[in-house]
Length: 312
Image (tube, rainbow, N blue to C red; front, side):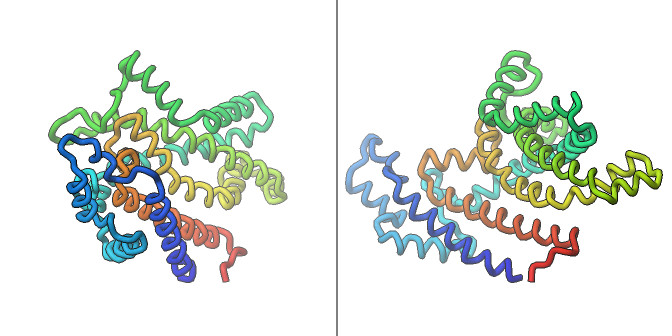
């Protein structure tokens, strides 16, 4: 409960900083109207009044904060729809992408990390290490474009974009077919990143006394590795994996834009290009809440898994 209360001023500070930074950027949300045919200074002033942009900045922020606390994040300047409604409509597509990538990434990270640790300094270890460095070093947008060109444009194995080919109805096969490339791209960095943590943690665990004792008792190597060593190796990895899950949104922003995935990330990219402040503030606020609570959950899980840890 104390950590939840501590999160309130953090969220307030993030919203305050973001709001004033956005309004400090030259241009503004009405820049797209300035060069339209028939636009006059009087009409532009009327639009500013309608959106409340002619009021002092602190008044605008106070009104936004009061509305946000009641679930009203304002109306999109570009589409005229409630910002929260637009975000919620795109949330399922983003969750589908993020959850699929996260589950796949966690499973593969553990397999790669454990195999690499048990075969330390072998050919397999070096090969997996090179793969990890490649995944961490290569920018997501570059890998995404390369995969799009090779597997969609040249080989035609997968669709180039979108979430579905069917106009009406739901087809699981079609959805999976469309999700293969974006899910893979989103998972690559996480696999490369987390597998290094799993490997390092497993190497430490495999050299502990209790592992040597278990082996001396005649336990099978598989049991020692996956049941005894991996359990303790999970402790430092848990926080990394939970926080990576929250930060997946950053990767989804790029991936959704490349593959025309109709989720929150693509909406966020459009909102930035249009200076659509209400949508930007709504998405950043929700993302901040998710990251802060993911941090709290990781602390609670860490304390649960390791009784020596206490947050008094």
